[in-house]
Amino acid sequence: MWSGKVVPHPTGDTFPQICLLISNCKNGEKAGFEQMEKKEVETGNPVTIAGITLIPVTEISVHSWQRKGSISFFGVKQPLSVVVISPSEKKAFRVSGEEVPLDELIQEVPGVKKFLNAI
Image (cartoon, rainbow, N blue to C red; front, side, top):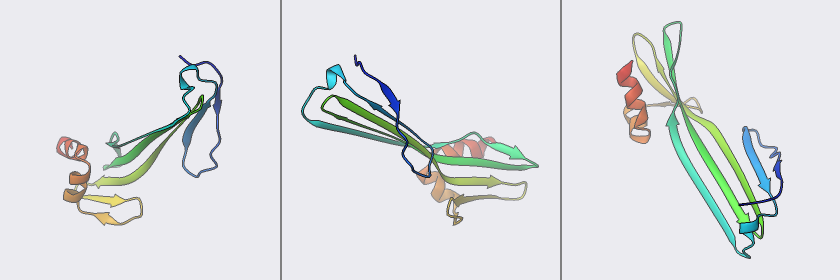
């Protein structure tokens, strides 16, 4: 259990983030420093507009630090690529605009295949 205050912490970064700083943690009185990072790539829900289907692929990362009675958390969700499906073809693009072969993207993000098979 912790006691203290949860305070939003502005990051000044260009990506939307959630960042919390918790002070006076009862169980966090260790003198050491602990860090945790978790990343996950996910396929978002497809969106169809005027016969064109877009499937977003995003990365979610969550980070936390614990040191001397304080804990800090922040998370980021950012786009990685998009799959574009028209009646005549299927293509994938990185956020940089570079086209990526669908087979390559499926190897990186297996969840894409489920959506491609359903459409």
